[in-house]
Image 1 (cartoon, rainbow, N blue to C red):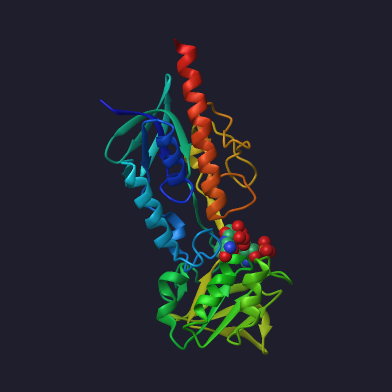
Image 2 (tube, rainbow, N blue to C red):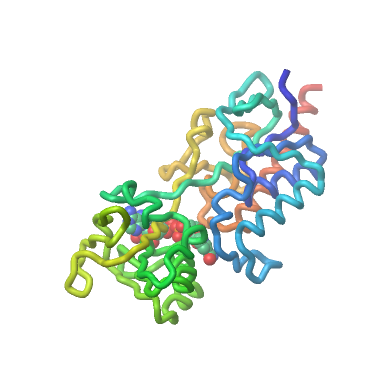
Length: 309
Ligand code: NDP
């Protein structure tokens, strides 16, 4: 016999936890299921644009969200969701340890690091190649490193790495970066950081560990940029396979199409956060989309109950 809820929120990070706080306050019996509380935000060195916190490590902000959720007695099950299926009027969510039924589901499925797909990327993973500057920056004390990417992820990685490394090269494939001006300015003012525009990595090279990156454009007359660390910060892809199986429509980037109230095309299924097709992928916008999802679920569940009477 499955446990039954009014709403199950899949994902326990910046979109999912606010959704659950609101749905609980709307009187819906709420469950959060998420394998990792905090998700990718745990890897953020410092969040400087979440109002109320002038600068806070991502993991700490997520711990505060969790404490807030738990203060209402909302349960978080730290489990991998294997499937979500429509079962009559309900949805059945199956994890490694059980099944849970719900009248509505909020998908905050997040995203996973994008890979370059070039030789050496897998071979030197954890031997110099990393996707997490917050986790690994301190291993490169006084060593030269590179960051690959031209967005905010790359810009904040470069500033963090410059606190440890002897030199930070930022490899940008275009002739400009698209990071926020404030993040760009911080980089440009840092003497340890050098930006290589119109440049792309072709191969990671080394023997037992990374020693350099072969570039498509020679740097200082050399094809191989000598670095001990390479941080791949080229964005992330939404994890939406489970949504597609449910019949939820995705756009060309495989992000879940939502309306302004976080509704998907499938009744009683909502989405929010990085896996939804919103232009801003920020903690605060994900939280707001989660809140809209909870409000829509509250309205729709109530309406469905009235219609059933
Ligand atoms: P983005 O998608 O914003 O940027 C990815 C960058 O990687 C782009 O410059 C892109 O180049 C480049 N890129 C993509 N694929 C390749 C490739 N194969 N080879 C080389 N370069 C490649 O991802 P981010 O992770 O930087 O940011 C994600 C979201 O999180 C954004 O909304 C961002 O604003 C937000 N964020 C905000 C922070 C903040 O401080 N406010 C901090 C970190 C993230 P191109 O430009 O050519 O497409």
